[in-house]
Length: 124
Image (cartoon, rainbow, N blue to C red; front, side, top):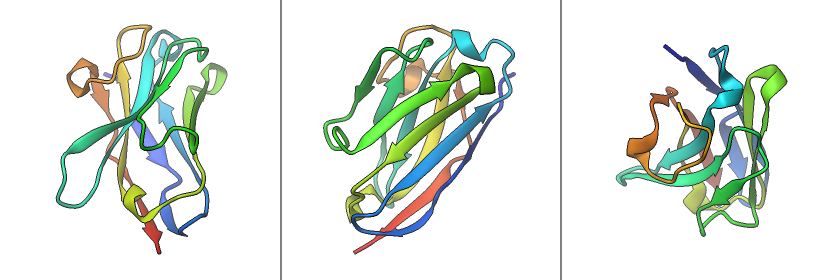
């Protein structure tokens, strides 16, 4: 069983930045594609970004493209989401996800493991 633990969420003003981290317990972390989803109050969970096992291929939701950057450090079993120019509509609980495949996916159902989530609140 893989455990994912997110950190780095908090309250930030619109236009500000935050960096989320996700530490995975898996010894084979480097073989897993990873990603981030989010769920805003009263809305369904949505795809944010994903990264393949080596970190050289990424994909973003249109709503965050150009503002968010996903990356990973396989030596540290850690994935990151650098968020810049934050907007009030980015307010959500952000979930770290992992799948037992090397290549990314935008589908929730393709992910095998989920973290507990970290709250990001952007004040306008």
